[in-house]
Length: 175
Image 1 (cartoon, rainbow, N blue to C red):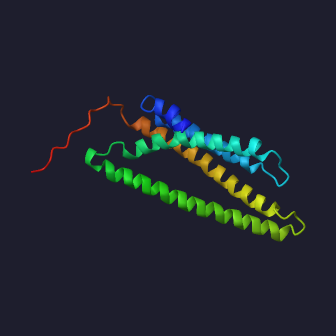
Image 2 (image 1 turned 60 degrees about the vertical axis):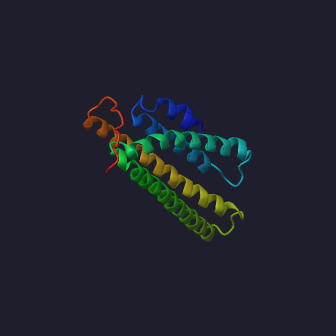
Image 3 (image 1 turned 180 degrees about the horizontal axis):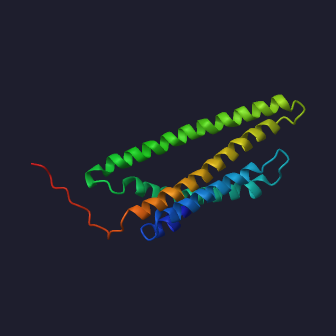
């Protein structure tokens, strides 16, 4: 909420979307990266890993969501904004479900491979390795998304002429 309300909410419309989206994705990646450093022997997990990771990831994604929602409905006719918003939300939910399934599959596969190749490892080592691998992939996906967003949003701002804010059109009822 801090990233969404205090940063993205205050800067929305004042800065280009890339100014919020790219750093937000990189902050979320940094949060995930912190979790990849966990080992089975890690101590003070809450203070040294979980709280910093949750703060960075939450703050970063809080800066990403408002401008992406705004971009999803930008340039849409007034009467089509509901459908555009619904499509954005459906794509977001589908992405979350597929992403969770993908990262869980990676975690389980990495843990199984680790268990098979390290028979003398401690009991939880395979799980920690699996989660670390999945989090590293998630981190890489966020960094790749930041790079892609930087390129696409910079190109979009170069090709789209800046216009003054237009008043919302009023749709008159049909007879």
